[in-house]
Length: 441
Image (cartoon, rainbow, N blue to C red; front, top):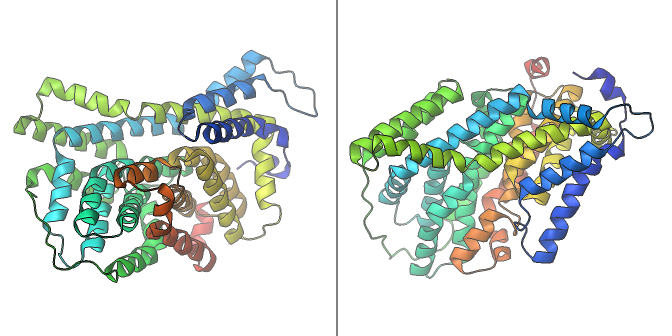
């Protein structure tokens, strides 16, 4: 715990690198009408370059450029960050294998096969929850399920925005809770807490939102006379990698071992079914890992950037700003929720916002004695909720494109994400904290 630094009010000067990134990102997005026009890695790289050129303000700084580079590398090479990178790559490899062996199709068809005819909307939401929890990615879930949602809305002459919002909400369910979600991995690694501890706390946090959302979807008038048709066949064996990963995760096994066993199981089934050869499986795993390459490199760059911002006094300044008028644990949690929410709204990437906010959130947690599992839950829940609500985010853009509507049309129907914010805020404000939670921190 950085007791001396917590007494220091820090310096706004230390936030200049982050502000440089945010200003560039916003200006580029507004002028091009596309918030994906400037890659996040380039933005973080520019911010890092600015930080490396800066000296401490208000005091004589003897550090050379080479010494600041060393500080940057030490921050980016933090053992927790490198572990996170390894897990990111394994999660990507698992996704690549399961996609190559058609496990994603199996999960989708399983859900459609058991979908109650009279409960199409809640059934679509439940299918999405299962897929997103198994895949650990909201974008992957939207890509896999949105075509089905669009087809259902068209066939039933339903509200396209409502069907899109239902899929978006279900995608965020898994992004928020899945053991192999990059967001969950980032949150648990930055707070040094087990996934199982985070899951138990997080599930209680969003349970009211889940129940209310299902009730609202059940009450929607849908053409009950139309039946779902088509080929919904699936091989139960293809479900095994997902089942294995979920079960092993709940046992508390190390995530690296869990993902490794999941990958090996997927390879064995894929080779058995002839989806790819044993030699080709290495390419399949590699391609999956490369899909997480940007995220892994961004995590390292952000680690270095945060280290320099800490050195320049920016971390202490923002902690002091967020907590100067806060005198309670609940206030500290709301500060963390506000921080990660703002970062997600600006960057449109929940994992990047968690990686950036994580170290600051940990310091705030130490100051106000907040349990790490609650911090991790706050980071993931609020960032995922806003990621399902910002109309310029990737998930809504993909859903709107497939549905042929405006992303703004979907926002009012992203009920689960809105309910997540309400439920999570109430959880922070009204839940009781046991003494053991204070000692954990």
